[in-house]
Figure 1: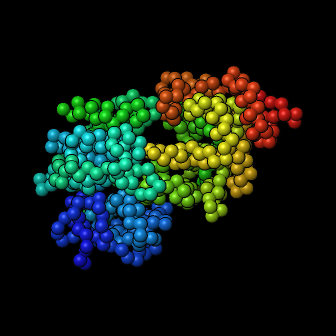
Figure 2: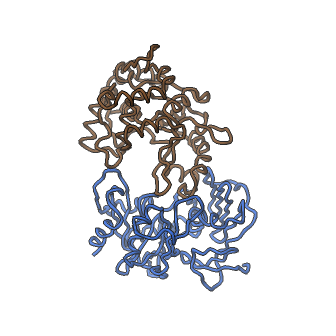
Figure 3: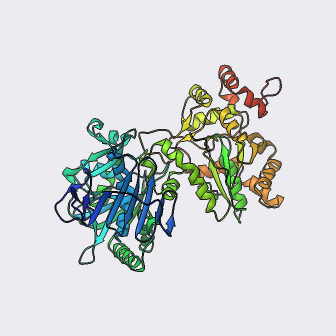
Length: 301
Length: 284
């Protein structure tokens, strides 16, 4: 292991990085994952999955974001970044936090859901759903009411020693669009844009960030549908597993060894067993985050 | 042959109608469910972009996204297991490096065009722009759909150009074989118009099946289904997606000034498309 200048803890992992990642929580300890600059290969030998800008094998992942950087993730232990321009670190991190960390966590054989999560009465509640379904904004509404926040966008679920699924804390920021920030009543002038020329900002939620893992009890799948009245429906137990698989972050990245597959299914089955799942259908334009929060508070009582 | 058939049109020109017709044709039991059409969705679908590129488009600028779209469509064309019918409202445009947004690889297109005066009224209702603003939007060469940058947009930005620019961009694209149909002919001369489109696509259906699909996708049927079950593609706050669907319905809504303003801006293409006769009189 190299001597990393910056050490953080995120998703339960101690990370050592060549450059500062101010979104993460600083930590002292021996890094188990290294993030560094370096030369990145242009393609993988025999990729098992190939998209337009990514390639994956069971233990390698390559992502190219033109004009920004190439990212190479291997064995759940190392992320190498080859930037096109080293002077703009902010933009490097935008893509690091999404697809690239998603791949790392899959290589670690974690169960990664596409969702934000909060703590209600000591239980982890996950808001899953497609991009734009309002997960982060809803989490932000709960933050404003002093609920603890665990993650945004990528949600790691790990089994504890007793085999109980727990939501593992990510980092204390929520990524929000300008209109959501206004809707929530936050002062946009105090927030840092995630990258130039994009109207998305980091909302710092450190004051309400849960640094401890919390047993997961519920998952709400957020579904935005034009003109729809608000509906909250419980997913029958026979359908829960399918929903967990569907809401796994970027399932196309998952190329697992036999051992990895059994680990994934062990985790997903234990989670299936332990939690209730609901589908929320709403028209995001007709049901604002505070109304949604009030309804969910009643539901969760 | 497995290929992409682009169902291209300026908005509010009959694209959904044509998709409903195809949906009936492609289903064994003739049934059309407007909320579950059998065509493949829209080119500007953000989710498909994210999944196939591996990059969150939410974190990219609109030009960065556009730069990847040709590869996205080529990737889709290369991995098809059946012919895909994809709706598209983007005009046929080119990126800065000269490459077309919609690559010609394994691609053909049906282009649907409608009298711009009727488009104007329908467009104005759909987006709740007033008529004068819509006239000016339809004349703007830089007009785009979904170009908002302050909130999440479920679709990618679509450059429409002006109404005339849109029509010409597709008809003269020079890259993709194209079959042009007019909304008015779909209505007035349904069987022949739809049959020619079906033949262009290369589908083999007996005349009875085509007639049945035309019947089932009739405006009144689609409107009745929307009234009963709602339509997920209808924008929030709009009363109904299937509103009137009439030819020449504009006469009830537009002032003389508005009509002449629109005609002035689109005279050439209106003439080319036979919406104006040789003496510049309106045909519909």
